[in-house]
Length: 67
Image 1 (cartoon, one colour):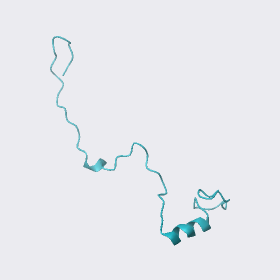
Image 2 (cartoon, helix red, strand yellow; image 1 turned 30 degrees about the vertical axis):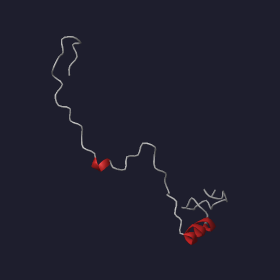
Image 3 (spheres, rainbow, N blue to C red; image 1 turned 135 degrees about the vertical axis):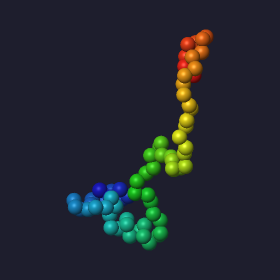
């Protein structure tokens, strides 16, 4: 079924929308993304630097934890 108007699509269709809906989108100049962006998407991922904390080799006597 068409994702916009729910009209039946041909079995071998490679589209998620029917021809009529695709024509309407083309005529109006609107384009909707074919895939939604996931909730955890980070668009600036390539700009992130790795977090380097250094060595964890100091043991604190009051809690015996390594810091």
